[in-house]
Every structure is written in structure tokens, then in C-alpha cells.
Length: 286
Length: 345
Image (cartoon, rainbow over all chains, first blue to last red; front, side, top):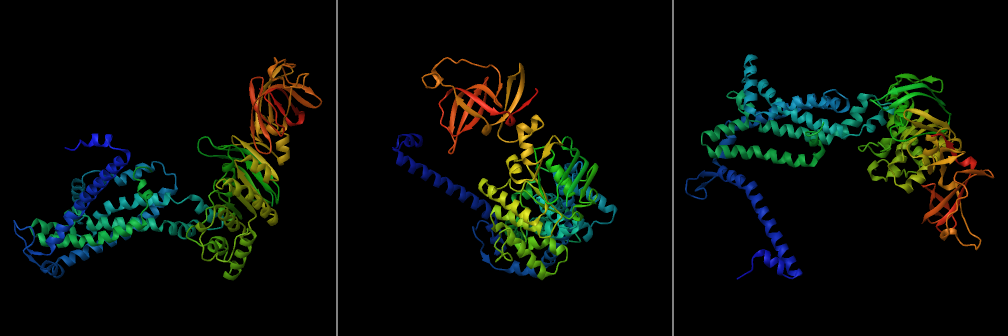
């Protein structure tokens, strides 16, 4: 009969107690790792399995017929055009965001603007409510302007969310650049514009890249707005996947999500290289 | 080129700012602006640099009125507390930046960059490939100094350039900056909160308090002839004692190194520690050109080359430095009259 754990711990000699604790710690760590790996890769592995399963019926634990039929289908059918559309829109949205928010964020970061935080909050407002009612209301407006079902409408709806990410991160990026770095340039005769391009922009570049990657990923994965405004004329990847899953085409949906995941994972690795925690700090501050 | 500041006023925020500053900074000299934090010294420097525009008054660099001129057009250069070197440029590009803006040809630019870096004692062999981050704090500040000097500015502004460095480097760079400033013969304005730095480096010291000039003069003048209580207690290692003199309570400001302690010894030659204290004078008296007061040595600290005594005078304690080992007990404290200053309460 072994002693209860607490008693064992209290009565054991010091060295044994240490061993007990390290065993406990190892067990705990292993359990946490196992759970996290399962949580992260469990759904992913199921997606991967589904994407190569040509036949898979209950109650078989694994597909009965394997193959790349659906991958082939994917690359022959409409999915490819959806993929192209999603990437195209994400690129356009990223560029527009850059053009609008880089100067805007710089001005906000460098000037004492009255009610600065309120301006930034207004930008954040659409994100504070559930997406569906916000986008439904936008859709009503867009109907009035004949934008529903158009590429312009689709890009505009993506910008609603993308501008927020972009502006908030870029304001922090510019705020993290010490002002004397610019003042040193002014003292040597550098104009504001010259200084912006030769001092501020190069130093801000990693932050700008990080922010653009965030925007790109957001646009690539944006679903609600894309469904309401774009469908059925312009089907982005997430909408395509939704349609496929809705029609119980598990394989097509899996192939789509695997395809959507690849750029996401690649970009997240890039993001990790450029992102610094203080870029997100403004979400609570400013 | 001397700097003339006439009636300069700048309100800045709610409280901080400068009011009606009238001073002349001599040509080719190093003028230190010193004062406690929030006294307006940084506002004054930034107004000189052109980062703030004056509300009232004028700033003249020589005969040139620069009051309304942008920082770019003032022909002044600045050295910042945190160096402000650009991390994405090599040292050569950092120092050559101003010359590039002046469209100096590449060859001459390189020659001048090397020349100025040699004068601030930076090894120039790999300045084209090394970035500021690869250098120590003291070296970075010397590179920043080179970047400011290479454009041959009329005025050099230094904003607490040594506050970010450790004590040893700071001591060395004080001499370094001073000798470079003298060899260039440039008019320099040096802002610091460290009164020791101001006194030791400057030709001329401006002590500021609460947005106004409290006192200005050579380091010796301002240290030896403080005209206000604030000046007296701000400079040196000062102590303020509230003492009776000529039947009236007044404030006496004195410095640790200036006072002399003499133990009161009885007939047998021992220290009067065990005896009852007999106070000869209840107030400060003047005797042979010195202020004399009764006190008691309470504690002593061994400081290496000298001892520091905590002396109690009329219930108030102060430090007195002396190189003799003394025992605790009654003592007499004497200070030459010209080295201690009375102020009304």
C-alpha cells in the first residue's frame, strides 16, 4: 500500500523529495505538451486526412480509399479562381492600407491631436460589435450605391477591418521611434519630408512589414463581409470553403482550408521575425 | 559667434516654460545651463535649436536674428542625451549625413568624415561597415559629436550629453568634449542637471530656477558669490543651517569641504567627550575672519583620502570633511567668512 502523495512528499528524505518533485514537474509538462499538440494538430491532421480521402465512411477510423482526386479537382475547377481572387484582393487591400495609414499613423503618432484616443477608438468601433450586424448595415448602404457584388465593394468591406489593424499597429510603430532621431536630422538641414524618407521610414520598416502581413492575412481570411458583399459573383477562398462545407463536400472544404492555411503559416513565420510586442501595445494605450 | 537672448519667453504646457530670459553667451566659449528638473533649461535649449518658437523676445546668433528661423536654417548642431544616431546607417553615413545634405562631393565628404572622427578619437578603419550599435555608449556620443561638428555649425547645442553614461566614462568625456570644443573654437551651449559638470566644464554658467535665470557668471563667481539662497544651496555639497546670529535666526549655507572642525579638549589633553558640555556661545560669532560655532561630532565615515564627520550644530546636522581622524565629542566648527553665506529666512 503506497502512502498518499502529500504524506510521501512530507516524509521522504530531502533528496527523494526533490526527485518526486522533478518527476511531478516532468509529468505535468509532458501532459501540457501533449494536450497542446493535440489541440493544435488534431483538427489539422483531420483536415489533411480528409483532403486525401476519396472514400471514408463511418465507422472506419481511416479512409478506405486514398488519393489526390480532390486536389486535382481543386486545381482544375473554380477553386483556383477563388484562390487568385483572394490573393488579388489581399494584395490590393494591403497596398491601399499602406498608402492611407502610413502617413496617417505618422501624423497621429507625432502630433498632439486633441481627442487622439477617441479618433482611434472610432476606428476600432466596428470591431467591437459582432461582425454580422455591422456588415449587414454596411450592405444596406452598399446596395444604395450599387456596390454589392462588385470587386470595389469587396475591397471596401475588407478595408473596414484592415484599416483598424493597420492604423493601430503603425501608430505604435511610429511612436516607438525616438523623436531626437528626427530632430538630429532637422538640425543638420534635413527637411521634414527628407527626414521621413531617410530616417523614419527605414527605421519603421520592420514594423510596417509586420503590419502589412497582418492586414494581408486578415483580408485573406475575411469571411462575413466577403459572403455578404461579394457572393455570389465574387467567391473568395473562405466563402468557397463555406459553400463546400455547407454542401457536405468535406474533401473540397478540406483541400481549400489546407490551401488557405499554407500562406497563413508562411506569413506568420515572417510576422514573428518582424513583429515586436510594443507594436500591439497601443491597443491598450494611446 | 556669440548668442544674444533678449526677453525670451516661452510658455510650454501648463507650468513649465521660460520667462523673460536676457543673457549673452560669449563667443567661442562653453556656456552651461544648469538647474533642477523642470527649471526650463531644456525648453531654453530647444528654443535655441528652433524646436520651440518663442512667444516673445529675440534670439541672435551673432548679428543674425534666428528667432523665426526653422531648426534646418539655424546653422546650429545638436548632441542629444541618447546619442540619436541612426541605427540603419553605418557610422560613416551617420557622420556624413549633414554633408550629403549640403551636397558636398563624395570624396571630400569621406575626407572630412575621417578627419572629424579622428579628432574625436574614433578608429576610422571600418566606419563604412560598422553600425552605431557596435560601439560603446561613450564612443557613440563621440560619434554623435563628430556628426554635429562635421558640418561646421556656428553654434553647438548639447542636451545632457553625458547623463546616459557611467561615472568613469562621464569623467573622461567631460575633458574630451571640453578640449574638442576648445580646439574647434565653437560657441557651445551645454544643458545639464549636474552642477559639478557645469562648474567643471564651462566658461560661463547660467543657473536657472522656475523658468528664470537665477544667476549667471563664471563658475568661480557663481560658486563663490551666490547672490541668492537658491544658488548657494544648489551648488557644491551644500548644507543649510538655521542658526542664531546677532540675536536673529538666519539661514547659513556652507559646504562640506570649507569647514574646519577642532575638538574641544580639556586640560589633561583628552577629548571632552565625557565631560559636561559647556557651551561658550549659543550663537554663531565672528572671530578672526571666520564664523565660529559650537558643535558635536556624532559619527564619522572613512572616505579613503579623508574622513567625513556628521556634526551636530544647534540640533541640526551637517557633514564636514577633514583628513585628520577625530573622536566623537564636542567641537568647534570654523568657516572662513567668505566661504559661508547668510540669508534671511
